[in-house]
Length: 466
Ligand SMILES: Cc1cc2nc3c(=O)[nH]c(=O)nc-3n(C[C@H](O)[C@H](O)[C@H](O)COP(=O)(O)OP(=O)(O)OC[C@H]3O[C@@H](n4cnc5c(N)ncnc54)[C@H](O)[C@@H]3O)c2cc1C
Image 1 (spheres, protein in one colour):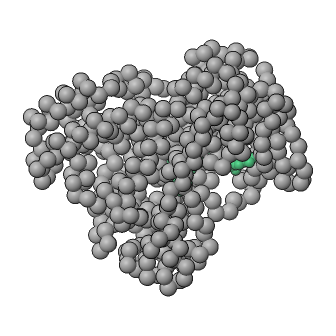
Image 2 (tube, helix red, strand yellow):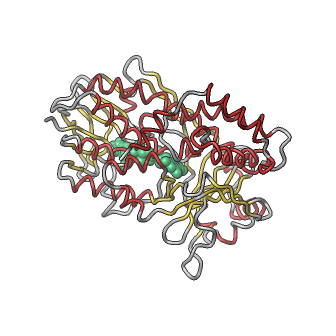
Image 3 (tube, helix red, strand yellow):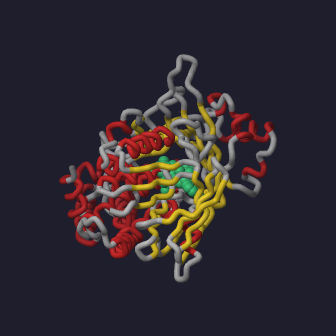
């Protein structure tokens, strides 16, 4: 069997290598960075991440769910902080439904270790991919440790899991008839820390994702196992309310005093972190197709980076591996798979879902920074959870379809549109969720069930999954 080549030992690349090894392939996995198990990585993108159903399912398929969940912190809902510091809790789903805060580094290290433990995956660190020669089927690298350039002759297909800045994507885009768009958000992000309290415990409720929604911008915080919270400020780059105005310690102090007065006393290292930590950029990447013949396939952020507001980038990247594995199984296993039809079918099946979650993630930015503070939105959320409680699978709220189920993102998006109409009708003139008109609800749910696409098969598959 030919050895397969994977570039990028981040979240998608390591999981993909495990999936390929499970299917009986040998894998050579190239990574730009040093081995993160030995060399601590500098401040990077998002210290912690929200892991939910799709990611958990993919991890379970390679036997790692339990190990990863050991250090996870459940987040049952949003804890919204208003300007006066008043808190209100908005559950994400029904009791028992939650998303999980996990450490990116710990997760990545677990995946790298598991990959190495298979004995089928050889990981080579400090190898920076710089391009791909389609004619020769060679991947170009710089060995950053020993300072030399070389071309690696791939024997089977090359899988690009080299992240949002993917050089393999650049090589693919240079081919004819590849559509490509990179849409930057006008917002940047900066990570800050709320350390543990003097007793080593959490200084805020740990089982929630904290949000300080301020209409056009927001601060969020996710808990870490050591009792700290990682906070992220999402703020415009430019303009009168933008990072460009926050150039001095006084400006930063005044900004936090006026916008996040209850967070400020907890951000004990604010000034140092604010000026030392980078301001990250956020973009959505649309690319089509994600593959070329039987030679190259991009997965994860390399193919479809999205903004982080639905907490789905990693979950989606992991689900890419699940879908690819399904397609490989459906098309029959052999020592020499027909990669081109596999890539073609995978792309056809997955692309509409990647497009859908990209849109949903952008929409969710408005929900997080603005709508969560709107009483009408809060009422519709409460009503949607009551409907699910009463009608079960006939009405699963959009957030839950995305985070607690694995129905295709494109169907979750369509259902979200139907649900929006239904909820607007049902909540018109309603002041409290408890006063819901259940007769009207039944009629509307009946109509919704008959007109929205059927989710039955997908929900059935979830129940029957191992
Ligand atoms: C602020 C923020 C918050 C986020 N929060 C969430 C969340 O809560 N939940 C969620 O699901 N997702 C979240 N995401 C998205 C998530 O981080 C990404 O979708 C996920 O990391 C994608 O995995 P990947 O393997 O495709 O890319 P990456 O994790 O970026 O991995 C790419 C790998 O390729 C390597 N590499 C890069 N270039 C080269 C090269 N030239 N040669 C060799 N190797 C290379 C990198 O070193 C890295 O190891 C967030 C993202 C951001 C920015």
